[in-house]
Length: 286
Image 1 (cartoon, rainbow, N blue to C red):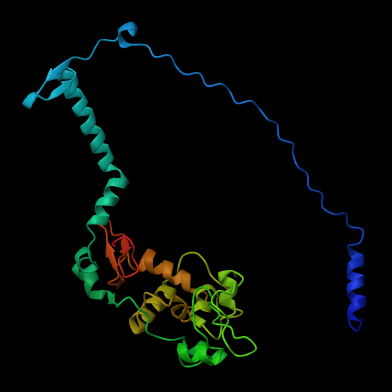
Image 2: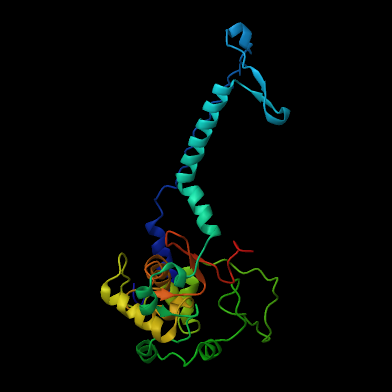
């Protein structure tokens, strides 16, 4: 192929698919069936069926009660039993837990409170120094954004506002194609490394899945103690080889918080120890 003109190359490629038959779409003919006729059941009175009529009683304060006293007591017993079974279910307990959330200081014992790392719910660092040195990142997020095209950030246009030939930004009404989040993040390696490392590992590095090792957990807690945690998980993940940002976020909510390794004021606990996000973005409390 090397050295051949472009036109000749494309024609030879077309020849490869010249005799390939076009795909044939096979459709099944629908069989229309007449809907069955719905026959309404015939109503038969209790008298004809031989069912005894439930007596009507006058209770306290002239309140009308249907059924004998023995029938009423049995019904109340059944209702109480059903109510008790419902309370034993997860639904009732979960609603009660959501209404009685407590802080980590109230939920955990004294030993856990003393060894826990306390954060304010935010990550205050930058990239891992080794990553900065290997790939020549800027010294801050602001510098990285401006040095790689700048523009105004928005979730609708994560790559930044594009400029036309005249140097002016396009209209906000201009339609832009929707991109897959992972593909967009890949294009933000130097400009927005937080977005990149949230979904991608360091170039050429394999992503690990499954349970975290004790060494990984130790690195996680060390970074949390030094820089805080709770957001900007892409930057946080740059310190932990083979893990990406969303894995760090999941590990935080599923392991670190439930075990009381870190106390985050944005999370409160149910009576069963499940952490519930109660920060400013929480819609449930509004």
